[in-house]
Amino acid sequence: MLKKRIVKILAMAVSLGGLVWFLIPIHWGVLNIGNASGIAVCVLLFLTAVFSGAIGRKCKSSKGLRVFCRTVLALFCAGVLWAAVLTGLMIYGAGAGQASPPADATVVVLGSKVSGTAPSADLRVRIETAAAYLKDHPNAKCIASGGQGKGELVTEASVIREHLVKNGIDASRILAEDTSVSTQENLSNSQALIEKNGLNPVMAIVTDDYHQYRAGRIAAGLKITSYPVSAPTPWYIFSSCYARELLALTKFFVFP
Image 1 (cartoon, helix red, strand yellow):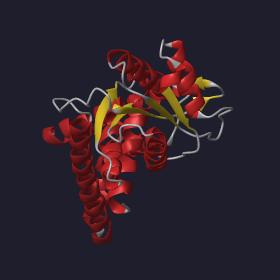
Image 2 (cartoon, rainbow, N blue to C red):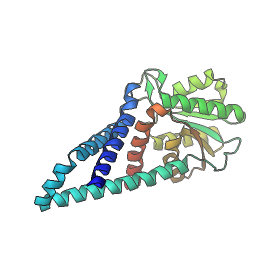
Image 3 (cartoon, rainbow, N blue to C red):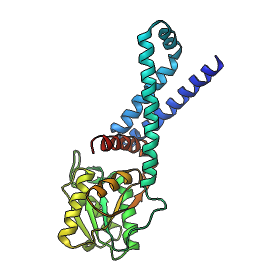
Image 4 (tube, rainbow, N blue to C red):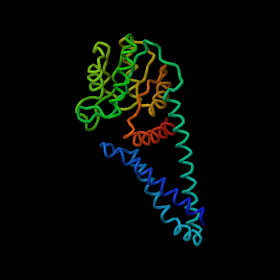
């Protein structure tokens, strides 16, 4: 009995902690499929823990409900394991301990949401990371990549370019790829622009750390030699970005 109470309290604590974690980005105006899914899972886990006694009693008298509950539990455990595997891949893809790009590799900054004409929090850190890298590698050229999406008054590429210049990067070093709406298009369109302008086909991909693994896999599928230049995701939006990437990676593996 004591064991069950401890498990119940732990489940409630974990679900409430997770709920807060997924709610935090909303304060900064970020609500996407990632934290929405996380919120839903945490609420369901909390309610299951609260009513675990009643559910257990019902299961004793209903074989169908027992099978259903066991199936849900098995799927939940499989989901946790799958998330752990994907998290490991994200950490690996972020590039810690991996070789650095060649000094003249073409820097490709992947776009992210623009609020009107202002970069979102994660796009801002991508720009800052790219600017620092370009200052350290003066012979490298850069492609700002990203089209115009819903709620954006300008293209993501134009915002990246503008803020790189504000960060001290000469405009002559930056090309804009302003039609892409996905990571696949970011990389394939940038590849075409590199070929057209005779730039080094090796890419130094600047994107959030959690996004590097998928970006690298897509690049490999396009026969692009690439290296990660990872930007640290702001802590206050990390939960939404991380959960969304779990879903995006799952889709990537199921529908490559």
